[in-house]
Length: 338
Image 1: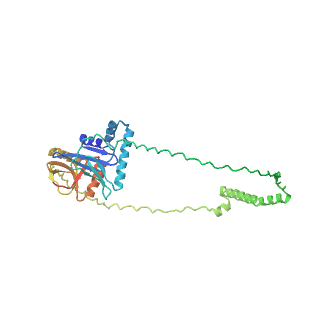
Image 2 (image 1 turned 30 degrees about the vertical axis):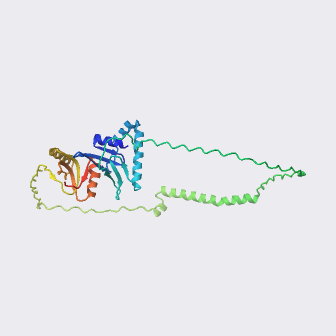
Image 3 (image 1 turned 30 degrees about the horizontal axis):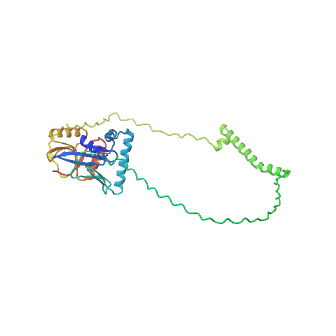
């Protein structure tokens, strides 16, 4: 898969490996500088298209092939191993669980002729045929002499006849006991039915004294509401005077001016040679609600900084949750003011 990664880095200056991260390239002073962002790992379809065109695969097969390779990368990193891509660098897993890239001293984006990620496995050597064992010479054994024994005459066995059990006929006492056991159940059902009928009669005849005794009617409770007292005619209500709100002076923001970067963790979303292009980029960020954006100077470039922080954790949270997670803006972090 390395030649497709190098191809996209040479053509578009970045490549997103699904479920792994994004590799960015930047040409500076005739050198190719690489950076890696593990949080930008959504599938933009470009690596899949490159694999489909280069390997002649369908879209599902290409995605499955990339997913298998990425799973192998993640398994090696989880087991403490490193993953190396020729001409780019080595990936390793930090103690905080974040994947980092150590680029090669000399980055080469030229595609190699062979790609170990998609190479077919070498055929296994056929096992050598073992020599057939020599046949063993059989030793003739003397056959035992046949002995004649007198045949024993077996007497015929007598078969036992199956015995059939006959159920005894019920007697008058058994019938009497069965009828006697049913009587309590019948009596209980009759009593329950009578109680149900009596309850229905009492409920539907509310004038019945029994109903009034057990379910007496509740007398309504009368609540007396005091009448409001009339207000005296001579009283004058004092109304508060309207509050005078002084007009608010609108402060006009001054023009954007580039300033050198300090040694803080700056979240950068663009690097330009023209100062006006960087100022226009910062104005677009301010319109989206990023009030802390400013134009910085780094080496001989004007960079659009979305915000700066005192520690790397706040800068990474800003980069992951707001910049790339919500607005999908490509960014990188630096703490060098040079």
